[in-house]
Length: 83
Image 1 (spheres, rainbow, N blue to C red):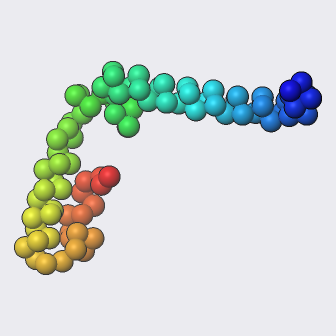
Image 2: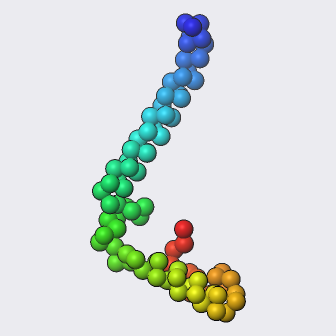
Image 3: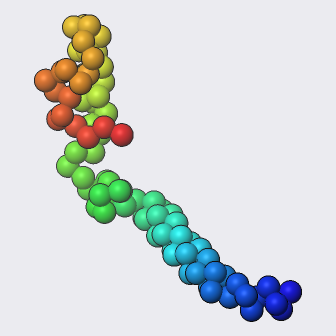
């Protein structure tokens, strides 16, 4: 076991460093979610576009069904960010 650690100590240290960075990133995402901070870095409750995208997506889906074309050809397809 000691021989394994001596041979692979660099790999083990690098693995621990990457694991720690991933842990910090996930922890930050969880804390932001609990605080109500969105992916843009702002509080979602104070966002001027809150709920706006969902309305536009529904209108776009309805209009694409009416015209028979795909949403990518719709003139309103770029007005809202899509996930």
